[in-house]
Length: 155
Image 1 (cartoon, rainbow, N blue to C red):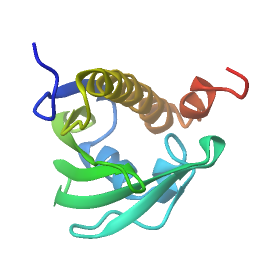
Image 2 (cartoon, rainbow, N blue to C red):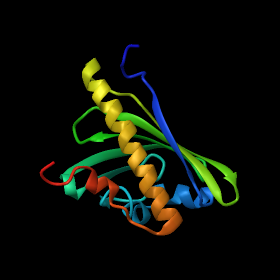
Image 3 (cartoon, rainbow, N blue to C red):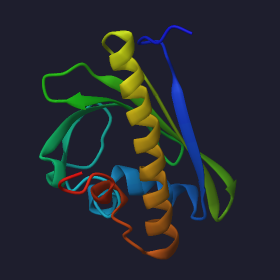
Image 4 (spheres, rainbow, N blue to C red):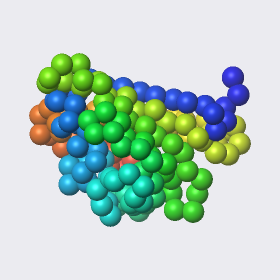
């Protein structure tokens, strides 16, 4: 298999909260900062560009919101400032009134095959950590600090 910008990867998780609540957790930075990034320049809105910052890593990503379907889908292009952007899409499929299956799909990786491979691994593992952290926050109100603890200082 050739790894390039057309390569698509995804991961998913059942979250025992209503679809609208899970969707809102990824749209509203006041909630998202409880489980993913540390700062944001604003709420996600279609056509709007925002920045997400991870202070613990001194990293900022520029996010362009391409698609929002309330309680169903979020589509973005994103990447570090000045770098190529990949695409990410979250879909929220209601299982019942109190639970949702959230899928994160990413594609549009840039670079040579080894760079694409490393970005794929980072995207899949990062998405798994984010979904697990979101699940803990939304279901139990627990901040697991998974993102910050993934690469503690000195590791």
